[in-house]
Image (tube, rainbow, N blue to C red; front, side, top):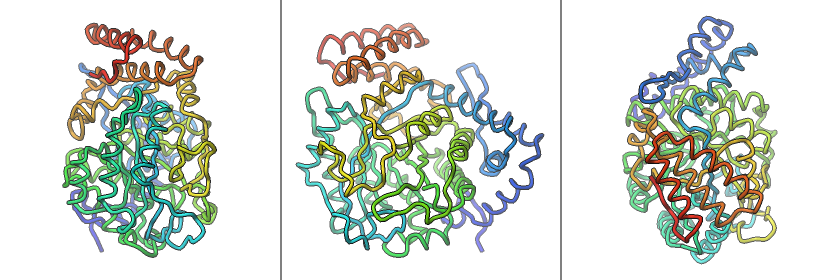
Length: 482
């Protein structure tokens, strides 16, 4: 028996099964206690301060009560407050990125992933450094500035040295006006020493999905391979932060286990990072199980309808107001459009989830990790965002200016981050329009930039941003940032 302790470094104590079950029971008992629910909603609401906005956030137990509540008026209020929080801290900006799959070699036996070691008919592929160069140039030619690299766990084929060499290659490529300015890394749990090497290589965020916080279910879903070790995997973020990585990204794969259990566990993990390291996760991702090669998502019997999925996103936003939230091309245009209002701040665009997919004219499916629901081009996604009055942002300034970890969070919590993010978004959008956009996207983009420049509160910042935007339009000068 383990006691719940968010400050513990032991997985079974900071993700405590008994605490989760008690929280779910409490939520069931109070899901129609509308006086309590109204107090929780008021607590979550952003409050205006002298310097901007303040949010208190919610505990995993409070948030579980909201998730259990089905009264339509209060569910609608959750959505409204989530949008208020999103606009207060992230404005109408949406950051864009793309995944880059380096290798699908993997020694694990994960039952939900086609890369599992027993899958004998999926073609195995590992990119050479020259192939990585070609992929990166293809991504640069789309307009991408931020990547998330992905690789299966295989100490022979995908050792840390390969990952580090690949990062170095990616950062070294400058093609026309293109450059990848931030490389986020989504690889298997590793050692403090290896996390230190990743930090020294200049990565952005280290991302690792828990898949499921239910230990018994986790061990069934990961029957073989290093990933079978629940504690080692769950404690990875603490090792990453010990290794100097300021920004870490959490996520579960919704659909493997009960969504209410996963939701509580995810928030407990965020609370643990805040309690131990003084800063919570930089991002939270919300993938759902999708069909892939030999994977049928229906066998897990925990599928989540869209309306519940949207409610989960809103309740996460109410609970961790300062954390970035990511939704990928796993989801359809319709679902992603709804999620943007619930608190999502980052999306992928033009993604291919196969190894070497970006250099292929036609989308390859034989090495995909999952089916891509939103198959639009990056230009189509950028134009769609602007039509919905979101500013597509390719900004990577905070990471390169050292505004990471607690420094980023303090700026975000004080509201000062918008003095950097808003003009940076407009300047990077201008880069995209000049270098990569279609004529219709350019037309909409320049109209948006003219409008949004007027929303920069500080006159001197607005003046500098306008001058930089003109320089981008009229020369090959790039990468202005506040």
